[in-house]
Image (tube, rainbow, N blue to C red; front, side):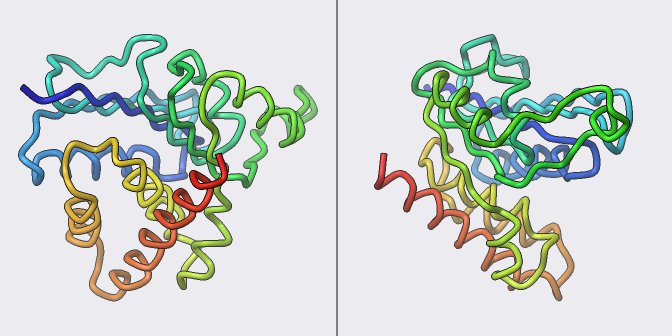
Amino acid sequence: MNKKVNIVLAGVGGQGVVTAANLLGKAGINGKVNVFTSEIHGMAQRGGSVSCTVRMGDVSGPLVPNGGADVIVSTEPVEALRYITYAHKKTKIITDTNPLIPFTVAVGGEIYPSLEDIFSELKMYGELYPIDALKIAENAGAVITRNSVLLGALAGTDVLPFPSEVLLETILENIPEKYKMVNKNAFVQGMNAYKKIKQKI
C-alpha cells in the first residue's frame, strides 16, 4: 500500500500554478501511482489567488485537510502564507522569494508585508525553503522556467513517491523542443538550491 503524499501549490493567476499541478498529476500517472488533483481560482484569472492540491498514493480524493500538507510550493511569498493552514511543523514550505504585488495593494487597499516578516511567520508553521526562482531561471537561460525551478526543488525533498527523473521527463514531454534544455537546467538547479538550504537547517 502506497504512502499518502499531500502537496499544496499556491500563487497568483498567470504564474503557472495550475500547469505545475497538471504536470505533477501526469508525473504521478507516469510513475504508476494513484493521483488526484484539484484547483481553486481566485476572483481573476490573472492577479487573483490560485491554489491547487495534488494527492498521491493511498488516497481517495483530491482535498488536503488542514495541517495535512507534506509540502507547500508557492510561486509568491504572501500566497504561501495565505495557505499556511495546510501546514504542520514538518511541512516543507518552498516559496519563490520574489513578490508579485496584488492589484489590491497597487491601488492602495492593502499593505504588502516585508519579506522578513513573511518568512519569520512561515518559519513558525513549518520548514522554510526560500528560493530565488527568478534568478535561478535567468541563470538557466529563460525567466519562464521559474516553475521548473520550484518543481525541481519539490523533487529534491524526496517526498514524491517516484524518482525525480519521472517528474523531469514529464515536464520535458510537455514543452516544445527548443525549451527542453533550459527547463532541464532550471529543474536541476532548483533541486540543488533546495538541497543547499536543507544542509543549513
